[in-house]
Amino acid sequence: MIGRIVNNIKGDKYIWYIIAMLSAVSLLLVYSSTRSLAYRDAHGNTEYYLLRHGFMLGFGLFITYIVHQIDHSYFSRIAQMMLLLSVPLLLYTKFFGVRINDASRWVRIPVVGLTFQSSDFAKLALIMYTSRMLSKKQGVIKDIKEVVIHIMMPIVLICGLIMIDNFSSAGILFATCIVVLFIGRVSSKFIFAIIGGGALVAGLIVAFSWFFIKDHGRADVWLGRVTSWQHPDINSDEFYQQKQAYIAIAKGGLFRLAPGSSTQCNFLPDAFSDFIYATLIEEYGLLGGAFILFLYLFFMWRIIVLVKNSPRAFGALMAVGLGVSMVLQAVIHMGVNVHLLPNTGITLPLISWGGTSIWFNAFALGIILSVSRHIEERPATTPSPKKEKKKIVEEIHG
Image 1: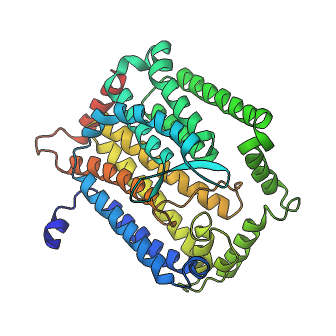
Image 2: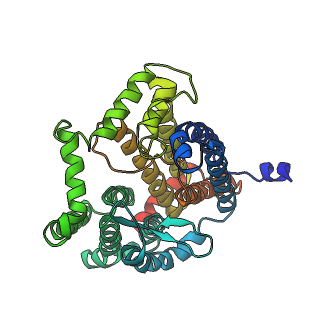
Image 3: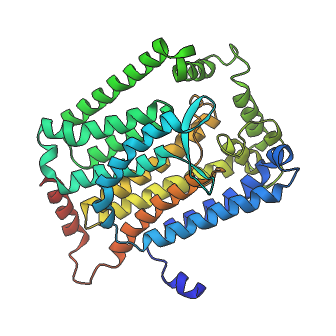
């Protein structure tokens, strides 16, 4: 049976290798960085977190395998339905979701007790929907009224609802959509109009939070993060995480091969999630951190190659959107850990400790590999890549 499964693994083999390597690194780092969490919540049973995380990763790989067997054109048919479901789901999360750190981002699944971030579902839905609009309905990108109704409003609405409690995720999703629009050859004046509309909505959300919500709501958190980043000595409590990350990075040096040797994980809050990259550098050095960055960039390069060879505009645009979203999140996470950016509270995709977020990433990877599988299985009579590339451009231009 295992041999049959292996034989059915299709798509870009390099992407599969990257997934396997990042999963292996994830297991090692989570096992190392959850020691203090284990002593606090599980009577020192670190194996519990290793087995739990191993199950989440294993099931995630299973999701990737199943999804990559599905023809990616199927996701075009369900994109609109998923987008329509996203709006009430985000609203439900805001008013009835599980609140952690004054933010309501999670929905609890009855019976099983698992929680998931509705923004993860909305991200998939919006990227699929935008890709569908650009590939199937070319008329919408040539008329400003159609652009506002079919593209601008969905992007601004979904990103705005996410931003209420999760500024960083909303920003990453919005930037991803802009990249997809640019690749989809949407007029630059329309793209700038969408950016302007997004900036206006973001400003209104910040202003409303600051003036009408008790203690300034999430706006106070956002301002505090930027202030502590610019002036780390003003508020030592808010800068505590970054100081501990500094120490972890300094201990790692240029190169180190010491899995499980992290000591800063005992002092660094969220060493297994928001600051796992600092833990990685402590145990494997700056060269180890650079290698992980290289894996994400190489992953993006493989998607670019995939897009160049894709015979369908929808698959190409969707793969770019999902890939850019994942890589951009990874780069921002690394930037936060080395203090190039303010704290955002986002995790490192495929490596950080997580629950259902791992499965959503696995689903996205399955879609990307489905696009890749379709390219591999093209009939021998399929036109050359140059002709197919011309076809995609013509399809995008209408």
